Length: 127
Image: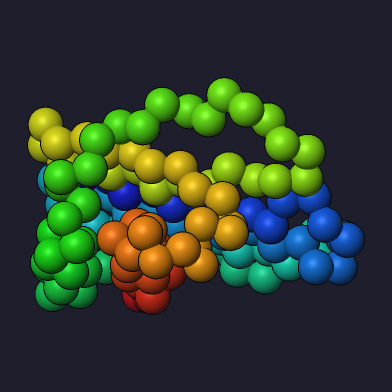
């Protein structure tokens, strides 16, 4: 299983820029969560920690409840908009694969409720 989330502020004033990269991955013997965050060009979080099976199962149940496995792989956005970042969530579990892209303004749209819920679950993941 591999889950990746990347989000950034796009091109705004340097003091307000931020970036987030989370990666949850399982192997035969370990479950690892990597969290990286930066603000104003400085890394404020960079950690990889082993996750308990209990936390992993809880997170996966929440993601499955959102319907993450029903999403498809969206094509990469073709249009480039100056100053706008395309963020994404990528999910692989056995033969199930999904990936979606979003812009920050999409997080305010009620029509994006499912994707917003997935992002919120990932953002709350902590070792």
